[in-house]
Length: 216
Image (cartoon, rainbow, N blue to C red; front, side, top):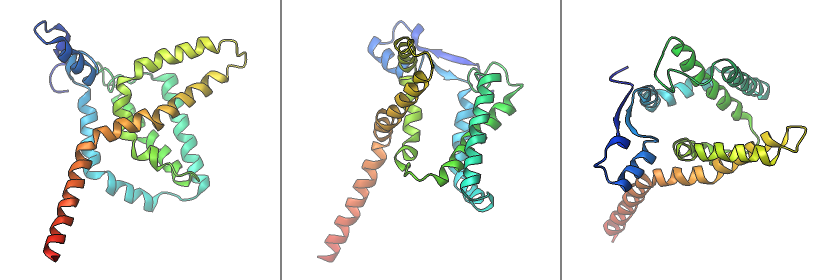
């Protein structure tokens, strides 16, 4: 790691405007402006920016095709997630930065598990582009809602305590997550990329305007 685990405690700054402090703590998801384990995420995002598309093209050529292989990839993805939740939760290096002896395992499963799920979706009969295209926004926005969602799930557990089968609660949780990834998450995604969309739209209009004047 580079630097301390935590630095820049905004909550301890008594001279900081209260409203600005509220906004900053919401944006940074806490009091700290520097959290060392975020380095891993930043490194991974930079790597994906440069190499993800070539890697996906290569995997699409060499990976087995067909619905059976897609089902196997999805099942293995779920099993990996289950085993990690049972025996190594939460991730240490990627969540707190305190200790990295099992960092290789955390990095490997964190990449392979969603990659297998993505391979499994290649044979879906449902067009999931709406959820796929807005994944980034859902991931970023969920940090502002995760504590409230935890409170919601606790409340749902109390409301559904009468269900002796215990099946209604996980179903309700899945429905709540699906609702979030279908509405609030995508909204946050498009708010995030609004500057890019605006610049692209203005550039396109400028080119069209230039072509029109050239024609006239």
